[in-house]
Amino acid sequence: MKKKSIHSCIILCGGMSKRMGEDKGSMLINNTPMLIHVLESLNYQIDEAFIVLNNTERISKYKLLINEYIKKNDINFSFNLSFLEDEIKNKGPMSGIITGLKNISGDYGLILPCDSPFVSSEYIETMFNVLDRLKSDYINFDGIIPFHFKKSNENFTFPKSGFYEREKTKDIFIENSEPLHSIYSKDTYKKMEIFLKKNQMKVKSIIKNIKPFFILIDEEYNNNNTTNTNTNTNTNTNTNTTNSKNNSKNKNLEDYKISKFNFSNINYKKDIEKIKK
Image 1 (cartoon, one colour):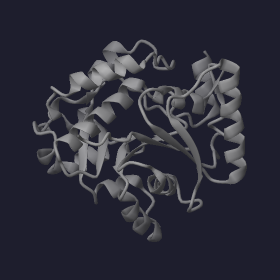
Image 2 (cartoon, rainbow, N blue to C red; image 1 turned 135 degrees about the vertical axis):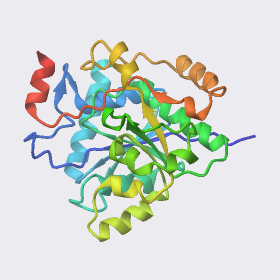
Image 3 (cartoon, rainbow, N blue to C red; image 1 turned 180 degrees about the horizontal axis):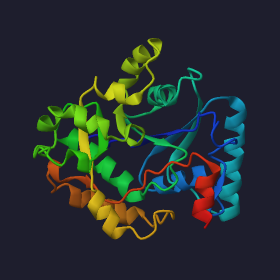
């Protein structure tokens, strides 16, 4: 009997919020803290989540924020939730990824920034379906990386193979990838530590040095089917997730696409003002 795959998520909240001027994760969008939007997207999708922050003071603040929200709204999260302090300070998101990967219980972790409050449960579900499929097919890989197929690459022929052929065109995929909405293997942190010691902090540089599986972001489907990208409409239930996982077993690897997504980051107060309007 196969051992159940552990689905882990690492939420990056360690930034200084210089552009925003205040703590982003606790800022309200539609009367709900930004971080809570992310946590709600993860409900019934994962087994554990780790929130990585840059100091103990902010850890205490976020614990209080989440506990108050749970009590006020009489809700529970389906996963274990832990808080971690950045091991390496002021080195960008890669330091938070390192801290998170070292602590996950499983072999892989999904990375999400706390300032991406509109990620959909469908996107998260697809990412973990692909993870489980790659593992069940015994394919050797270090990460699952979503990428946008840009119009500037219209002369590029998309490889049919879901893995090996896409490796040959890695640079194009990396250029248009979402490195902070990706899955990485636990052992990837070792390479990241080497890069940080050399003061190389771009996460995309790591992807060039690992064996990734690239998954296409279906822009056309999303544009035609998403009516309001500024509202988190996660209505996922445990039953729906189970049915989707069963259906995915009959799918070819190259057929997997991310069809409902919103990776928009909230970087400035004016971004929130636009949503309110």
